[in-house]
Amino acid sequence: MKFFLEMIKMVFEAPKELVDKVYEAVEVAKATGKIRKGTNEATKLIEKGKAELVVIAKDVSPPEITMHMPLLADEKGIPCVQVPSKEDLGAAAGLDVPTGSVAIVEHGEAKQLIKEITEAMKK
Image 1 (cartoon, rainbow, N blue to C red):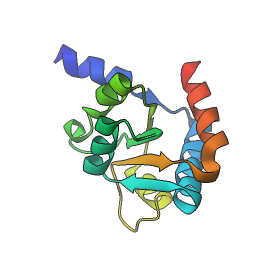
Image 2: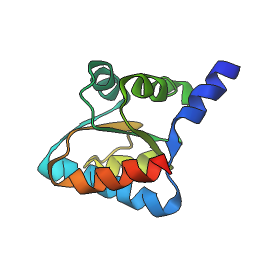
Image 3: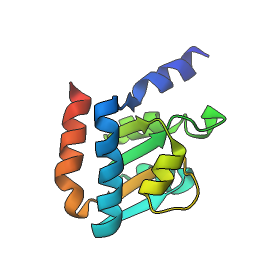
């Protein structure tokens, strides 16, 4: 149980003022770069070290579905941020359905947004 609690602490939970910026980064990367949607796809990209930013929804049920991702991302040096809503994350990714996670593969014009997010994560 302690191990799982430590894994949950590894993910950066975006504060309210940063959440919209995370969703915007996903939208911009979708339009001008490349994203992959879904936990399986995001996990594969983390394992290969090809993700630039991983976004996980906090309201995924059960939480074990995405619980492994922050640890993997940390091992690969990939920023991993948590947002409150899988519905909003799905919408930002251009989906009509919720999604538990998204990986930004190519930032496109979202480079500055990703930089701002990762800098905020370090504070």
